[in-house]
Image 1 (cartoon, rainbow, N blue to C red):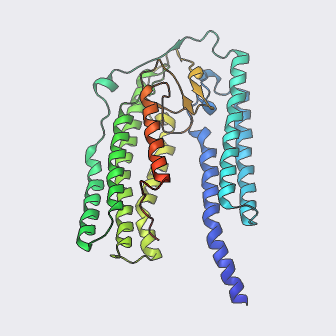
Image 2: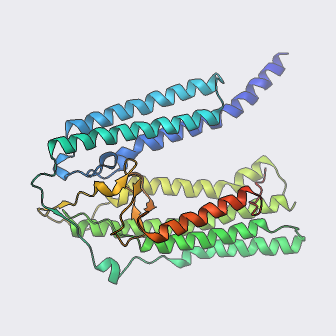
Image 3: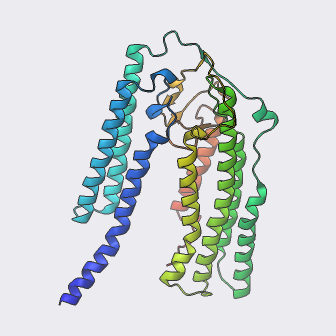
Length: 352
């Protein structure tokens, strides 16, 4: 009887710990966002650099951090006592954290308007023509491993007489999608600070170079995982736990690399050390809050020709919904989702 209880507890623990790890990661991701954000964009609100230590901002950060900690504790307790399904807990936690960020955004924006933080400031928008004449180009050589792995998967399937090649199609889709993303990101509107145009342009160039390199390397990591999973499905290798763990090691390596780069570079590369110093100009970055919605998550500006812009919250890019092409992209994604939901387009099965 005791051995049966011990086995039950062991199985229960094995099921709970992954969910607790996901909750901890979610709390860490949301909690680190304000620290990685640019000083002039606390919680997605554009402010002058001289206002970055305002009491309302410090108070908003303290309340946000306390909410992050309290939410994680409550989620841990709920999952441990099995009061709700872990998926429901994670969804509720994500919604609560998003609400906390929205409240912080609202309080800072209200103080900015009430106290006139931009009153008398000389606002400007700066561009760096060298990013157009000498752009940061993707290093396509880094995509070779992904192509080789896709070819190896196709050859393996042909030699084993496999009935389905869904994994190969998935690998090709990964290569095409990441290639398109690399081209789009390399041509996205650069983030240049009017107060330090030369230094910020240098930082952004280094940041963009790192993002593109990691993006192309990640394609190889994804295709390496898909290769092992396809060999499991075709019976070339056994579907054992050690083999499955090995299969997902490339994805884990890519995740760790992205995490390390994000912490080192910060939002849009503002934490990178420039190769030279530059005295600050008398200009402040133009206040463009009117084009950002949902606490700095959504950008809509019909007068901006850029299709991709760097998000204010989070270290990645978003579509300019004021651009007609953005809606074509969203429509294509929606159609693909509907076709997948109807079973017309099938996703590759995951090996176990």
